[in-house]
Length: 217
Ligand code: C5P
Image 1 (cartoon, protein in one colour):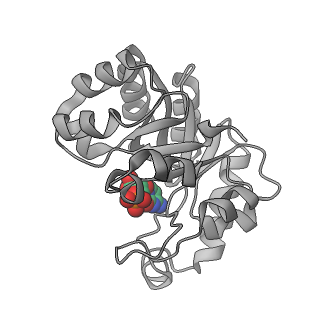
Image 2 (spheres, rainbow, N blue to C red):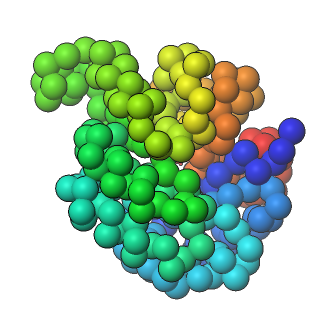
């Protein structure tokens, strides 16, 4: 089993804190995720640091704009050593096409429906049930040149036939009193077909980060 299926989320805006977490990580064991908070606060400083430490970087930008703007944003990140990044599938097929044409060697992942949205939110915004919206977005993803999807562990069951990369956040091996509601353990997620799992606080807040890395790998 390759340890590189684990992506550790560096969810902080503080460069020293990010470096402190990274000092416990091994680039042979995991990738790292830089989200908007860290990217906006530290921009090239964090990307250059992670590159110098030989980490593969998942830059989670969740782009959602007109095709030209998304395409230009993807061009702008080409100068960094980014392995994967994200766009929203709801941006439409022209946006997805423009993004895949510009992504180059960066693997492009589509975000389907944010896990923070409930069934009621989806009904209110789109007037259709969650599962219908998910299936529609999946259809759009399958007809595009996107490399993979970010999805919740509970959507993995709909993705058995999906050929692309499946990246799954919301993973918990122990019950934590936090904001993740629909969770699954790492071994269940891998067994259900996750190619990568994204784990933040259970690893970054642990007193023994290396031990947690082994547990989630
Ligand atoms: O600390 P925790 O393990 O909950 O962190 C999960 C990471 O995955 C965070 O960076 C969060 O933004 C991200 N994420 C998520 N749910 C999604 C998409 C991304 O929790 N649907």
